[in-house]
Amino acid sequence: MTRTSQILAIGTAAPPHYYDQEALLGAFRAAWASQHHNPRRVEQLHRAVQVGGRHLALPMEDYLGLDFGKANDAFIRVGTDIGAQAIAQALAAAGLAATDVDAIFTTTVTGIATPSLDARLVNRLGLRTDVRRTPMFGLGCVAGAAGIARVADYLAGNPTGVAVLLSVELCSLTLQRQDLTIPNLIATGLFGDGAAAVVMVGADHPLAQGPTVVASRSRFYPDTERVMGWDIGTTGFQIVLSAGVPDMVLQHMGADVDAFLADHGLVRSDIARWICHPGGPKVLRAFETALGISEDDTALTWRSLREVGNLSSASVLHVLRDTLAQRPAPAGSMGLILAMGPGFCSELVLVRF
Image (tube, rainbow, N blue to C red):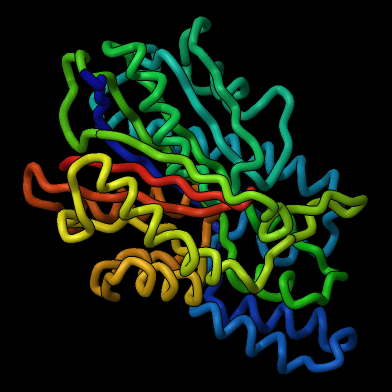
């Protein structure tokens, strides 16, 4: 019999610096007016992503003097702060203390830290000195869904355990001011900053209740490494973002979901809640087309995109939080968490409410 795990609580946090898209666009317009041959193109691309505002790790004026080293120092400082806030919030909601945590999984793709963020949080939060730490780097947007799946894998072998998944993404700190390529212009309008933490317990834990992680599936698509990711250079993280991402969704997602559901005796109509990563308007439309779902099914994803932008791995966890709080599903019904990311790859997580 498959061992299951439960999602007890989700906490979120963000830096205090929030700017609406008009303010951000004005700053980019000023910075690039003398460099870009068609300044209106910057505005067109920023408006096309349909983001209304975003949190930034730093006050907007502080980005002018950032180099790779200073940006990464800010990642460690701010990332540790908002990571601690998200975990503390999630543990409090779950009725658990930091000393109850047996394992912590952390994911990010927007900064480098050694010791990793989870190590820096041991003293900060008062985690036990025997806590198991699994830092994950490089999964990008798929890591929120993949992280839940990997925590569930751990808890399958530790059915009385408590584990935390922490996602910290400070996308603004990867800003490339001299890169005027279309992928970078899109990225500067699309991605925001934030963190999310998920507290999960094994099937035999006394507090085991809430959404059950039933199963997960990972899919890697061969020879797609240049669809999405980073090139790392002297100025830091430079975006790799192919215009073919929506096509990857249309090509693969429908068949992958159908095969996964069929293995559990389900079809698409059995899914009461679709918890999708907000990759951007074109990607979301591709999800809807590929899966035959409506904008009502993805309404919370659209709202998250408008309110805070694409938070990479943290985004789908924000959408899951909102789903549980604002659109609770009938008891016993099914939900599907899905995201895609660098590799190119996808992760599907089946949950029972």
